[in-house]
Image 1 (cartoon, one colour):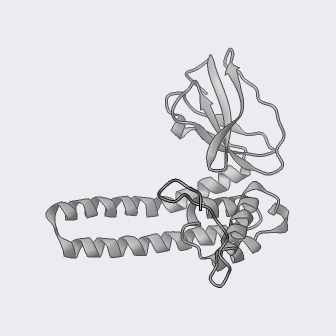
Image 2 (cartoon, rainbow, N blue to C red):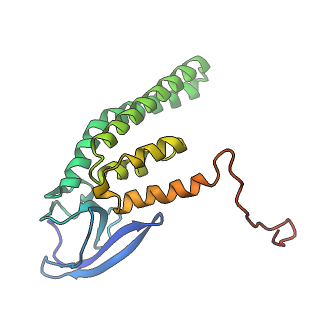
Length: 217
């Protein structure tokens, strides 16, 4: 990593929707070390010298090289992580959807300024169709990566708000037994257990909320 020889380094990962610190150390003469074990590939975040942009990468049991400059941490190159390679290839293929979505968003803003309701309706229709095509493409990537953690990772990152309970259950059941103990499949199964309790025909779970007077009911 060019441009820095001293500074703080923090290693984090996501847990319960928040970033938690796994370890921290200092760069000395351009070097630093973290030690630990990992059972499945998992997304980690490196914060260097308190820079706002962390380095995101899939850690796994291999020799991984991160190359870049301290002033452009969002553009580092990660090699040696098979999971990261797969995720990168997915990102490249989805770039065209992202660019088209941005273009439609810009057109929508212009149409709103002009008050062109017909154009607004057309743009919304195009955006919805593009959104569906993008989701179908992600579902394809999930199916192609059912035996590695990128499959469930993509579901969590991209598809959870759009999948029905049955779709989520079927997708999760189709993951290879070799990754069922990974963090991402476990998270999906936990979500399925929660959603199963509130499906149509099930008895609603008990809950307690305060009344307008602040008394629990």
